[in-house]
Structure formats: structure tokens, C-alpha cells
Image 1 (cartoon, rainbow, N blue to C red):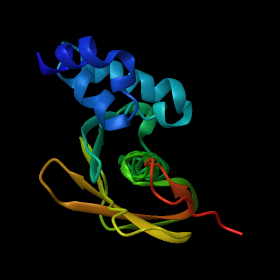
Image 2: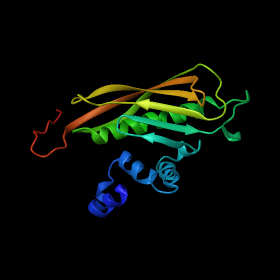
Image 3: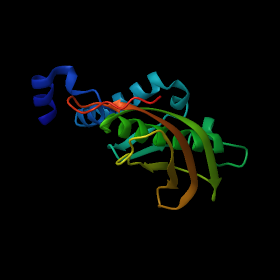
Image 4: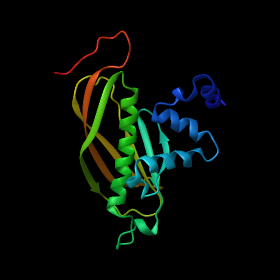
Amino acid sequence: MPCLLRLCTKGLKGFRKFDEIYIFLANLPLGGYVFDALIGFFAPYSASTTPHVETLSKTACTVSIEERPWLMNPFNSVHAVALTNIGELSSGLVMMTAMQHSPVRMRGIPTKFEVEFFKKAKGKVYASSTCSLDGVYEDCTIAVNSILSNSKGVELAKMTASWNIRCNGTKQMGLESKKKG
């Protein structure tokens, strides 16, 4: 009901941030699957693993995939690239959402991925990432960790995405804009 009220009062302008869209859709029947389809439309390569966004907020994201025949390697476990793919998706969603909530205009691009594998991945796999951009007002590089685990909570892998962040001034009216030279 709050989502319907928001839609009626703010229209589509009330949904400019990924977490707002996710919360709105998650409260609708099959809305989570609609959000997943949107992710697949805008990031087709990520859609190849058939990911499901479990949670999304401005500081955390969890994405899951189910074991499927096309994701398996010859060793009867989920392929390393599929695991890296959902780690990238999880870290990317949380970083983009954090940038949307920052008072500073930011742009970012991942420049490096490092993955360390601990155990074979079977069954349902979760990639959980956290990120906070509080206090970031200048260009920098930020590392976002994505922990991959199975349904029993056993850590399978750790992926670190290094993001190159560029700041272009403030978003809020009345505040002095910082221009980089």
C-alpha cells in the first residue's frame, strides 16, 4: 500500500534509484521477477546466470543463482565464471545504488576484479556485498567485497571489485559545487 501511495503522489519521479524500484516491485506479486527481468534487459551478460536479487538497499545487496546444467563445469560444480558474474552483479548493484544516494555527483567504473575460491559451489549460491560512500567527496578507488556462500552459509569464494570513482560536485541546491580541474 505505501508503494501505491508513493506512485500516486510522486508518479514515476519517485522511482529514480535502484533500491526504490526494487522495494516497489518486491511488494507486488511476481515483482521480484520483474526486477530480475529488468536487470537482465539492461545487463544481458549477467542474465546468462539467471540471477535473482534477494535484497537491495543503499548499503547492501544479495544476489542468488540456482545450480543449472549450463552453469556447471566438468567437475560437477558451478563454474568459476558464473560465480564471478554474480559477485560482479552484487557489487555493481550496491555500488550504483550507493552512488545514487550520495550527496555528491559520482560516476564509477570497475577497473579490477580479484577472486579467491575456497570450496566447490553446488546448489543455491548467494553473493552478498556491502558498500558505503559516506565521507567520499573526492576522486578515489574503492574496493567492494562480494562474499559468495551456499545455502548453509559456507563461504565458497570472495570477490573484490575495485571501482574508480569520479566526483563532479554536489547534487543538492544551495551547496557550493566542486569542479575538478
